[in-house]
Image 1: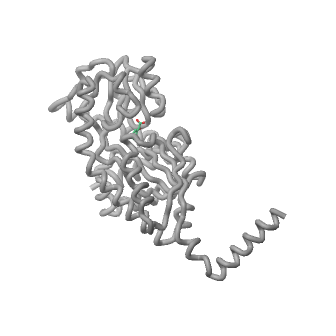
Image 2 (image 1 turned 90 degrees about the horizontal axis):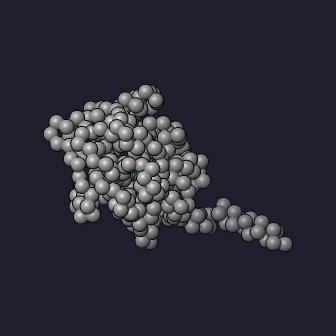
Image 3 (image 1 turned 30 degrees about the vertical axis):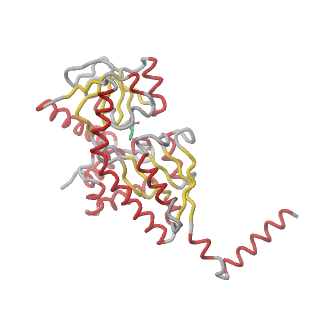
Length: 326
Ligand code: 173
C-alpha cells in the first residue's frame, strides 16, 4: 500500500509538472551537495565560507547548498574524484589534491595572471574547457590568489639548501624541495601536526595563512622567505550538475564567483598580519635577499614547470600557453 501511495504521489507530481503547475518550484531552486578539502572555520576556506553565507542569506537565491563538511567527511585527495563523478555537486579543493584526475592541474599555482585578468583575456574559459574535458567539472572560482606558499623548518639554514632534511609536501612543493636537496614526504594537511610532533619531518610546505589553525606553530621554528607561487583553491561544480541548472542559476553562481574572487584582494593585508602573528609566536623568518631572493624565486618556478613538462608534456604545454604566455 505504501509503495502504491508513493507511486501515486509521484504520478500526481509528474502530471502537475507537465501541466506547468509546479514548474516554478521545481526550476527555481537547486540544492548543491558541497564538500570542502579544508577544515571549516580555518584560514584557507574563509572566503569560500563567506560565499556560502552570501548565497545562503539571499532569500531570492536560485541555488542553495547542502554543506556536508570538510576533510572529516571525505579524504582531501579523493574530493576531485567525488566531484568528477557526481558523488558531490560542488567542491572546494586545491588542484594539487586532484592531479590524478587532471595531471599538471597545479600549474594553476604558477599563473602570471590574476583570476580577474584570466577572465578578461578569455584564458579563464580555456581553463574551464580543459577542466570540463578532462575532469567533467565546471571550474567556477579561483580563491586564495595572493596568498603565498612558504617552507617552514625546524632546522636553521643560511642558503636554499635542504640537504639531509625531510619535508612534508604535496605536489605543490615537491619539485622545489627536491631541487634544494630535501627529501619529500607527501601527507594531507590533517597529518602534519603528528608528523611534526613525532619529528618524522623537519619541516613542511604551507601557505603563509593558516598554520595556527591546526596548532603547527607549536612545532615550527623557522619560515623561509619570500613566499612563492600563488595559492590556488578552486570551487568546482560537477559538469552534469552544472548543465542541469537553468541559465539563471548558472549566471547567479558565476556572478557570486566573481564576487568571491574579489575577496582575494584582502590577501596582501592578511599575509602581513599572519607574518606578524608568526613572529609573535617565536617563528623566525629566514629571509633570502637581493640576488639570493631572485634566484630562489626563479628556481621555484623553473623546477616546477620543468618537472610538470617532463611528467605531463601535453597538459603542461597547454597550461603554460594559458597561464604563462604574453
Ligand atoms: O600544503 C598543502 O596541503 C597544499 O598543497 C595546499 C594548497 C592550497 C592551500 C593550502 C594548502
